[in-house]
Length: 109
Length: 115
Image (cartoon, rainbow over all chains, first blue to last red; front, side, top):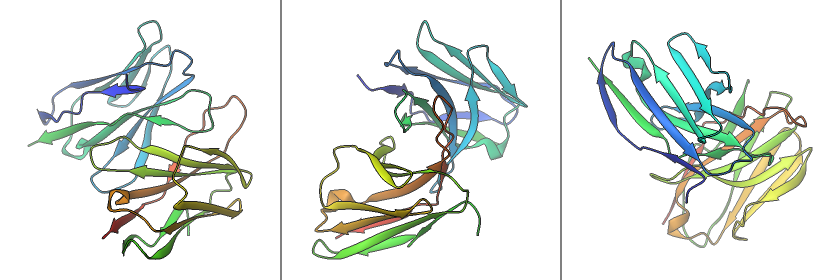
């Protein structure tokens, strides 16, 4: 079983739509959780950290369910500029991060 | 320069060549990383350096040899590579603190093609 599992997509949504991605992880010892964003042929960049209580940053809301070992990202009012690959990332306590393969989002006009 | 820089951005090499990838971070971080990103695969951690000391080698073949002369510079020396080593090689840095989240900042990557 992969350490981090994500639906690769692509998710094709119209501008203004709400879209949600889920991610499941296998290591219950995972300590920290993140969503990174990677544009085509670019490096990954941190989008937001994910906390157990849930957190919001503008149009983006992240949730963590430790009991079920899944993480979600909700994007409201999608913009064309949101088109990218969204990487679910976690830290199991090692001095490195474990990355999912990513979910590709394509927002269409 | 700011952030994390990598050179070269693109590299084509033969299987018998020797080349080196360079990474430099201008963020004052104490940890640096090499990752490999192949098509349709997740980023794979290769090496971790913390305060210039290698703390992790993720079962990487010996044809990849890292070097960290100081906390700002990281090299990846390449020799007798295989075509399947063609990938995007990403360098990252972070400020590692015990028990803390370590957001990693990535360089733009070196796209390597092995012929």
